[in-house]
Length: 494
Ligand SMILES: [Zn+2]
Image 1 (cartoon, rainbow, N blue to C red):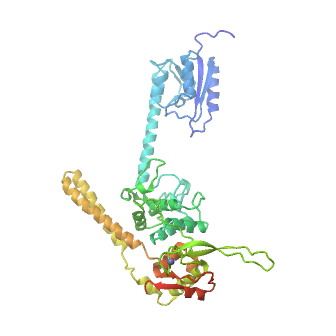
Image 2 (tube, rainbow, N blue to C red):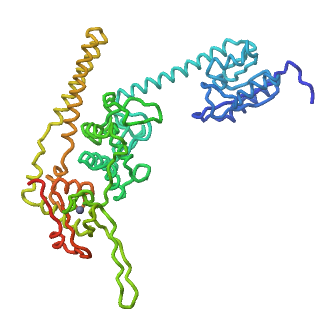
Image 3 (cartoon, rainbow, N blue to C red):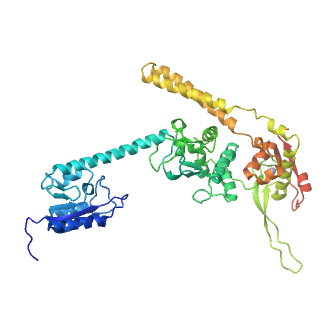
């Protein structure tokens, strides 16, 4: 191999592309090779960084770092690239290859740069590139602020109940969240059930037993239901930016939320009410999910203790041929003190029939009217807004030195307790009795059969106290008539 003349540059071809580029790295290498050939130079090495950004620091594992090492070992003296932006978008990187640190000759094909003639152009171009990166970053930040003011959520997976609208499908307002009607029904129902008093675990169980699933296709749990009930996005409230990956709905202060530009699924007061009930309460206090209509609800007629559900088992009966019929298990209620264990199905049927009959009666509306003093939630909400405005003006008085700290402190405490009181009133107003929705129902029986177990249990609890009597050992109650004799119903009102 002939000795190369010392004036013949030993060239490193450097090619780079970042993740979001599709201009082929192969094309860059090809262009550099022909230029090197045209100049009669020698290619000492080719270095390619794929998926590497030029504006971020390049680590020791990159081809860039390997190239610098090769230069330090004296294996090359010149870098050839297609554009300045391939080398770098940061002046710091240029200082890595230019004096005083290193003296690498840089040749940029498209921009006609050769540092042997002139260093100035290269640095100017890198400065320009640096500026471009900065402007892009600022533009992105400004865009984020603008998006916030317009009430648009950050891109990402929306919660159960909404679909993300891709940019080409957006309306003139640029709406990002579109209501997914099937899922939104789940959301509305979760809020309604919870505000009517159903335990989280019961809500989850009812959803699961109807085959409803979360966005990820998993079953509902008390924790997922809880998270949903805390989420301000459902009331079209946009929380302030949170550290990525740390979305904790319970730590969001509703006062720091701004109006969102999408359709709410629940009312703001429903959200306030559910958060009021959940925040500060340990997530484990999610109540017990019941599988049966009356467990924990009906009481023993002897000792007045709430009955529990149990699995009864029939005794295997001997047949005439000597074999025995298999025993089978059945749903039962039992007194925790041992006063009885009875077949539950027939009692459930009896109580259901009585409820349907009572609610279908012509005076059922009286049941509903009782105690549901109409509270104007809108008025409460506007009072709330007024208090918040007062709080803001106090803060601005203090900031401008127009109000003493102690004075402000007193007023703020007053406002805070008034706000807490209002939230409490809103919560009570929103926690409707399950009877209220029945005022618009024509076919009570159909409603009952469609209703969730949580809802039926709430109604039974609202209407009556069920007392279950012992029937004597071994006696089986199989008819509604016999059930009626062995169960006492006490009406709570009406
Ligand atoms: Zn008892």
